[in-house]
Image (tube, rainbow, N blue to C red):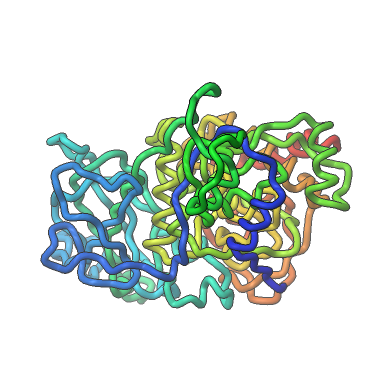
Length: 492
């Protein structure tokens, strides 16, 4: 399937010429190619690793000072002493870091050099809350071997920047960390040797930065027009109307302009529509779509959750259709509040791009425990955007991540309802039946060889495409209900 690319410059210019002047909205930062990654601090800088083209420089540590736009600390792991308990057989040496103070962070993960290598073992961390003295219990980090990634052979996978990575874990505002990575022990009964850990193991500490500024009151003075926002360097007469509160750069405007048919330029939220309004709009947004479509749900845009458009690659990548939806859990844990969900998203986004080497946020959409729906990978919520969510099956599908870990915890009803609403609308745009089945062609996933035709349910769990526990047993059991509700919302 040929991937279509649209540059942000072209979209921005079109937006400036065709969009009406926008209503009040939030601002967003600029964007540039994700391939331009500054090196990390030198080994002499406390809390940082050796120079690397794939890790980001962070400001020198100054107490609890944090970068407004977020930052990433990348620390090389060190050898650990072998565990004294040998009851399960000989163990290969582990790696980790002893307790240490770091600049503030809220999310952790472990990465390694070779994206094709798998980490067979356990990863555990414990942290200290910022300003506190006590340490958390050890927490498991999902090893997440390769199943969430761009397809093999894709431009994103072949960029040379992609690394192996665990799932990220949300730990809340912290300034102390300890980590241990242990390989699987040898099993003499099965004559299996201990598998060594991948090379280049590093601990990633991600600070999500500050939340976006709240939307101003309707009668707020000062501001700029949509045209001024797009062309920030050009003077525009001050008497124009349709003000937005802050300047939008060309790149951030481009990320918003791809949703121009759904919301004003720079909007923080794409509002919900009734079923009748949605059907009317769909005739424009997706010409030729079948009449079965659910009401468009409220969607928080990338601007709304504070995506830093400087991180991602500038171009947007598309496929031809959206034939199926894969549901995931983010495996980031459940210790977040819905108010913190934008921070969780910014952290995952930074981890996907800066730490894992992806072109953008991996999932097309995210859903929090309160049922809020968020725009994920840039390119337009109504469009067939190519994601990096389900290895081997990213083409002509979309990925939805429910924030949290649902292996032994039931997902909130609000989150399952949100998945139903989102799929009823988005699959409806492309004529897909949420209760139906579809044949997809594998791009190579480990579970299915490249080129194999696989029949799957239109709403599937990640485990249907890859040998993984994702989206967690408890969330996976709710997918039947989501399919039924989604189809009903479509009028089936």
